[in-house]
Length: 405
Image 1 (cartoon, rainbow, N blue to C red):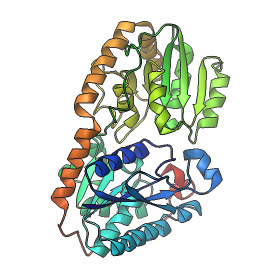
Image 2: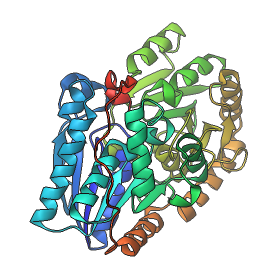
Image 3: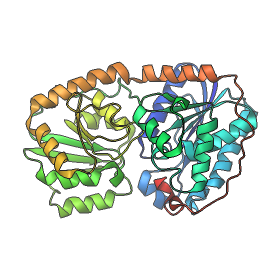
Image 4: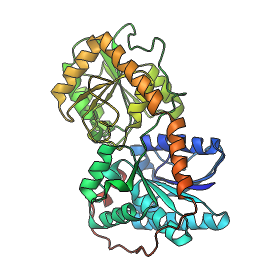
């Protein structure tokens, strides 16, 4: 099958969805499919400091085409980039016809792919992920209309969990039966427990935050909680993002510099070793599509502390395979971390339950097979037509800070 996968800010961007993309691409190639990836990227050095950037690197067995997001970088002109993506898909189809188009994110990539699907007569799959489920469409009428058209007309809509689907339904009115639940997944061959695998290493308990350093991920809340965490512990904050410097400043203000390390950007091939070097994973996030970092932590045998947030409650259950507190509740975070730091038995029990469930439910072998079955069912069908490609452009907060969309 000839598949065109359309990604938004693929590696070396700092995003769990980049990891999701590379693992799916590997599954498709291993199954014998002919895959082309078209990916946006940031070329502007200043913007690259926030999420990473630069042309997407080679992926074995995949034809990779990088498109610099010139419009997005020039004042948030997403419409310019949408047309570039759609035209590139059409040009590649003319070179060698595709059977399926699959876009990550509903906007801008999903909207561009829906336009291309209509132009070339090839069905499209759109994965609703991350922010385009949480806030894109609430920001302005332009993006709301684009999201509604994608949600109404894509051949298949994939979404990570029921809580996330419910949020999109509440915000944008999409019937729940439009969604196919495809959970997040993790490479369970790459992410494995460290020596001992029970979080009972000698010395301080090693807490680990990995991902985008962004207040929306709760990293500042975690730092506020740490001074009240009792017992022997150290913490690593891994990653870059829009709030890296505020996080460093807060750690200094709170007197945490001798116990909190900021390790910066981590190449994906090194991340599994970072997990194995720690004992407890902290993800105090306000919302997720489906948290790939939590799955990586589960596969590494970690006890997980997270929040009762959309996208988290689909995989973490309080007291069973992790601990949950309310998002933004700093005191509750401190109390839960104190429990984990001082109760090795609790760490072992939660980590073991998480590991077993992750291997059984969230391996890429199972999830990749589910996605390929969706492709097979959609192949040869006729995409929706008669969709207007024109949307009036209205003011939007993301045009000033497009990297946050």
